[in-house]
Length: 383
Image (cartoon, rainbow, N blue to C red; front, side, top):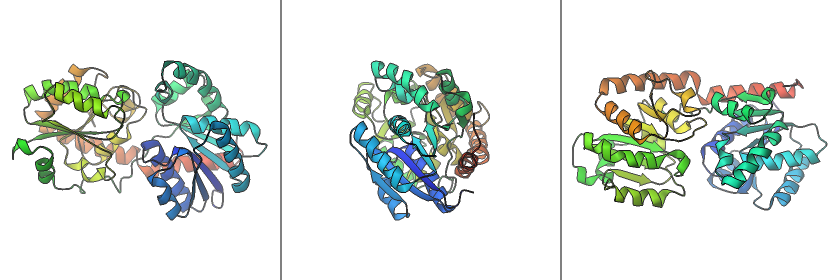
């Protein structure tokens, strides 16, 4: 049923953030089963654009005002004549909803929402406005995809029609992320922490956007207590974001800059995750936790905050550990305990890897979305 159909994907930018990476993976999988696929970016280009074009899919960038982008979207829809328009994140969703109101075409509309917290990061005033308009706009879509039960419940509590919401967890590329692809740990540590010598370092790692919601300030504040209990603890954080300079400065103020390194975005993260002794996701709010899932499938014991989708991802004490979200003491205590218990870490690592392979693989995600597409194209009413 899906073969030969046309699908238009609308993302915010062609940058390699988690929502865009997930959406482009979906597009590639639909292209592989015989669909004609087009990608449009609402605001700006990025490294993924050339990859999509090379793969045989059209990829274009708008990058103008809302009004101009809506006109451009209408023009592309009329020319491409998609059967499905699939949008991701807030601005593309707003533009798609406006466009839908102005079109008299039989098109199925799918919106992927990656957490209502995205609306709140626009500032207090804009956050309140977004809280009012986004549920209404999402309810205009035929289907709203949510990455976890927690995120879905947030949407429904804010007024999104329950019958429109489907939970499709993010999927991990288990061919790319696996235990056996690590670079040399000894060389890495010698480069990052040369003053630590050749000792038995306990290496903590994390990856994500460096902004308040991700909680990296909490990890920093926990470092003095962690080092007091385990002087050989070291931490590496991969990612970029608006808080980077502030975090680096705070590490100096706390006198823990010898023990924590902030790296930029790392496209080859699968080469570094497997040699970590512990992966930590300190988020204040998290709709899913893709980086944590990638660490888990690499066989790394994982500690995450008990918030949002992380509660759905990690079963406490079985395939990972939870700490109290927002609590520096809880975070530090859990890291110290796990650093002293290699047997526990091994058990968590093994169970975590199995859980991701069994429930959160990229293939499972693609199959669920494909089934939803086929349902929509079969003219069944989701409400």
